[in-house]
Length: 385
Image (cartoon, rainbow, N blue to C red; front, side):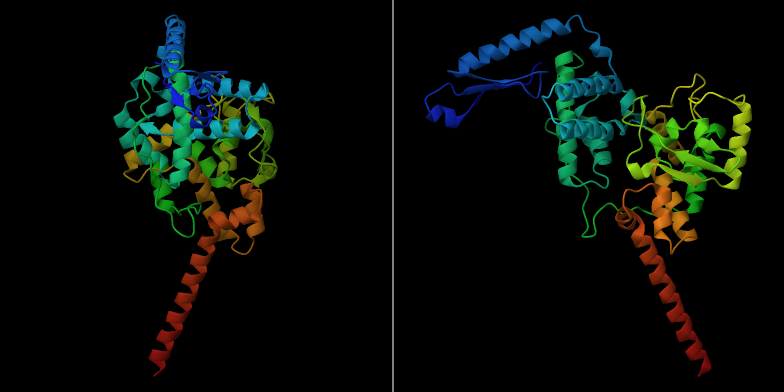
């Protein structure tokens, strides 16, 4: 059902002109604001729109859509509005980013992206989705995400996927923020990472090992081709990525994302074995981590694999992106005085980004070393008395 109500605009009422507004911009493609003399006139206009959209939905198969299918159609509509000049580039980018955050959630142990739109309940949103959205996000960010997702759900209602919006009435709250902010990465112990990886199948163990030893983003790993791997020099050239759960290969996140990363000896050896197993492909578009039919593995599968592995390992769930943070921790151990090298290998746009995310690790290590030195010196003095 169309979620629109008549609203009286006081400023127009004071001028003595039609003041009852029907605003369909957030629920209809090409929606507008129209004004009527009375509330009854406005309601009749809404009823006519409801009948029109209902008649359209009767012949639609949208009721079978998953959230991935919904998002694909919704973002296509947003892109059209951007191309037609109806929306700004920032509006388009914001909607894509927020929908991505929503689809990254897991409900009842399964990726939300694979769930049928009609099956999502208010309880699932309140007790599972919101708990995941609020992690390391402020109240404002969570509310912005929910606002964008709410518009997508209204689009789903119009298309006939469902009749209600499960986000309505659900409390939206972000994580408690500290003065230092929430963009600082949390360090994960090596034994925890090894435990998680051991719970993956052999194929996915290598997926994870590659991420842990190169720090590539998930989208970069999904887009990686054999032409980007230099098996002789032992390095990988990162110059492309798959974004927003599509199969379209585009540029990296930033210009600085174009980078060359050295490969560890064990990963290089495993890549050589995989290259031979795949028949020594000479196709420039042959994916290293693709499916049997050379299609990119979906982002949802990456999420599901790592979440399931964490559950089997009995540890707190992590995201695939945190394998990138683990790589950063190893870089900082190897190059504690060369933050510029860390920034380059990570593909950050600015060294301040590297400092903001990982600088506290260096500070913690320095504080710890100073404490050890002081305590050691104090112990020596006592023993000399």
